Length: 80
Image (cartoon, rainbow, N blue to C red):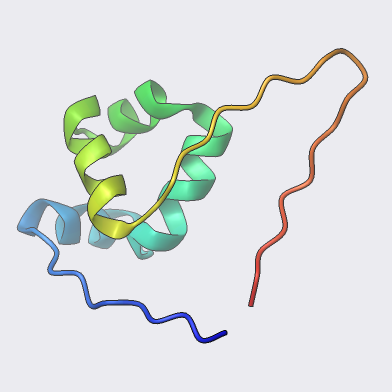
């Protein structure tokens, strides 16, 4: 199966954040949101939660919430 990615037109604010952190949002956001959550990520990037949500939607980054019982673990695998 071939996965196609569309070129996303980034706003000036998006490119400014990428420049400040020296990495693309597509790589940075999943890691930050996973480790820090939406609120802390938005604060760290200097944007509102609404803006962060829009960026995630625009970039095709899906956020899922998972609850684990004590002693349970979860593994995330990247395809491709």
